[in-house]
Image 1 (tube, rainbow over the protein chains, first blue to last red):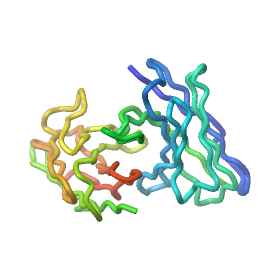
Image 2 (image 1 turned 45 degrees about the vertical axis):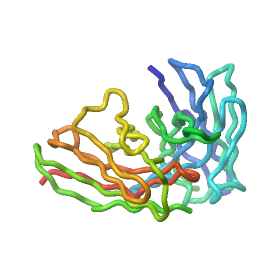
Image 3 (image 1 turned 90 degrees about the vertical axis):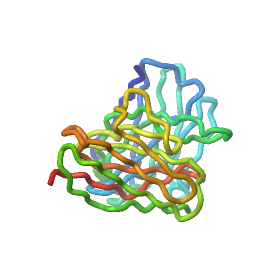
Length: 123
Length: 106
């Protein structure tokens, strides 16, 4: 059974960098996309970015200039860095596994999720 | 951007009821649609993908249908464990979620 677990600071100051790591266990990172998805308090879900196991990345256009996703497949981990954060970045951040979309080189739906990490941006 | 609109936003139902949630896309997404269930403080759980394919381990009372711009999630015989918030997600172009439908006890 694949399991994902987020880790990182729960509190980040405005203008600083939010950094989270997701550790994957119970399965290989091969053949899948590895996603970051966030949920602001009381709101819906928004995909942040992803990395393919071979290394390609893509980001939500609304965040593209402030976000990077990287991976260390030897450690079965992938990470999120979100720069110059503001209060609007306060959210629960989920990592998830993206199943390849049929006939495409992009992720489709998300079949395994981490439990989520609450990150608050505040001074 | 493809916008996903769910209706209703809140639905009050009783155990045993047949429940239907609708998701509309702002443009055709073929059948590239998934449904998730989320409970408070938990991660979303995948229920349906490719509009109508049931994820392994999901009870058969859940079913999905539709194509193009209109989709439905049906729960045939609501169970106590089914209360929560349901989200649709398109993956035709990028990926966007609906705003959610909360299923609450009547």
